[in-house]
Length: 137
Image (cartoon, rainbow, N blue to C red; front, side, top):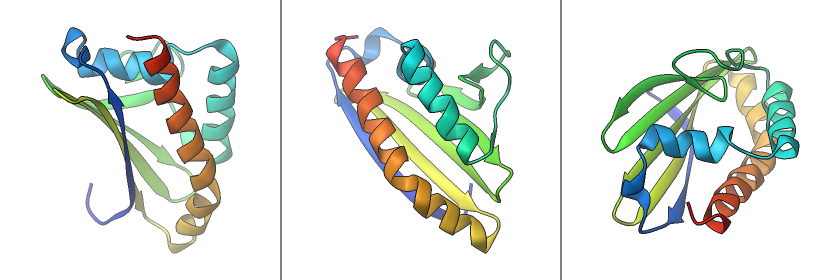
């Protein structure tokens, strides 16, 4: 992804990052969530018209396409019909699990859509990371 228009990063501090692969962490953080949170995530993703794969689709996490994995990272991607695409990077190291978001805008109007969605995005990411920290996984 080039010309990144937005990025943010959140760290889940844990000494157990190496206990799971980055893809397993991605599933634990955004897929293996309580039904109410899953519904809220799906509503949020729908509100920005993300084109997600149906549940259970191979090589996806919560509908996000897995575009690259390695021993220390998993990169997910989804496009919005509103003119932007997003990537979620899950990276594991000795400090914990990092979840970084990158957004690239293909249409100038897409930036305004993202600006409206950004407060909710940041709230969701924080709550997902805090919920995973509370489970000590």
